[in-house]
Image 1 (cartoon, rainbow, N blue to C red):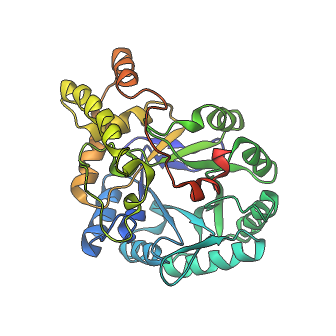
Image 2 (cartoon, one colour):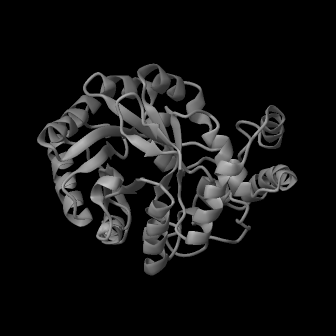
Length: 331
């Protein structure tokens, strides 16, 4: 497993990370034993970056990771944690809180659930419109000084917010959705991060399974599955998006690789400052995903991929309108 420095001030991370959200019900039921086995398999494969959020399964995801790490050396793992999402007992969303006092409260609970003394990368999951980003980052910086946090990251914010945050404290990375069919960050956000020496941890590289090569129309109907209401998976949209997948499959087949592997390889090839975060929750899917490293894309391949999946060709937004309205990265 290759490793790269995350941003100009961050730690050395594996070339890909493991996104753990799907192990806590966001994509339908997950198997606890298989989830823990997948976490162990990822670590054994050399992945050291585990990404979670304190609101994934209302704390379930952190407790699951904490259980999996009991048999491992804490210092061999980089824990990336998002905070601030507010949930209700019915698993609904109630908003976002990034007040300084809330930052420290969320962090205290996260440390307890994970069973660790510090978090490697701590980041607000969204921009709180009621709290200046400088105040949020300042509160996390206090926790860095106190030893509870090692590095500060951001998630789904725009170029102006990135600059304001970086003026308060060094930012190691921006976590943002990035894939063949989600390329909005290329215009302003990516250049800003590169100018400031901030890395990218790219989630959704397979667009929540849509461009994995395994998705079929009608999948994802389980209660609570994000894809049951995601615009790109809805009737009238999903058919057109799957046409893009089939065009990509022709290229993958010609190279003797899977659709998922070529999609991940494309993201990884966009720069060493971009770390794809693979959302595998089963060992077989993890093994397939890691096969991306053997995929060599030529100039002709990149051109063919661009023809098959042109920028902006996906139908439907990456979130419903109400959620997009809360994404600073979309403004």
